[in-house]
Length: 258
Image (cartoon, rainbow, N blue to C red; front, side):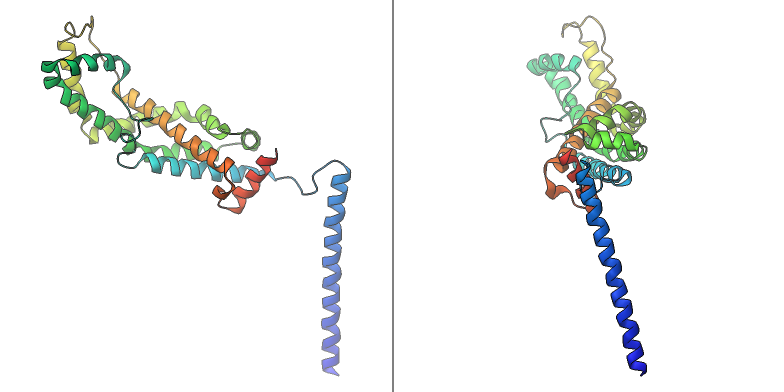
């Protein structure tokens, strides 16, 4: 008798659960049909949290990958597209120095050391950019996230550039100086400037040069970083395989359709 009662209760529970699931499925189907009838997507739209979350995840991944790539030893020096050369006002003078045996013997090696130091300094400073970008990403509004998500290639990078470039460079420059000091750039750069100024008549200069190497390297390093982040962003936009989480897939699948 007890077994019969238990069996009856179990059957009641199972049938009740089936009714609930059936009802839920019917409701979802009815909602989808209603949406289609009213010209809306059958599947509910991407939520604000999902849109912002997916975009922020993509940007943080891009920042980490970008800074990681550019922070490797030799990353700048070995890549002609981002290698930091001497400032423009020095490049014209550099050729004259290289072409003059005596000047090249006196200054040429120092120019080489300066170029090596600038690129090494840029590489060392990459890790310092992550907190600045993370702050800009964290403060992104839902409205901005939706515009960026559906804005096409480079939209996220352009947002970061407009919202954080000035602050990034202000915060970045002292750190670049530290990085440059670590590779003793002052010991190579200051003598170069001094020697160039001492020979300015021979080099066709009418006044001493005083280029701001810290500002110059900061701007070059920042520009290279934005280029790398844009590459990472567009990779996720173009290639579904790069969408390595459910949130990324959902957010950028939505972007593909809009």
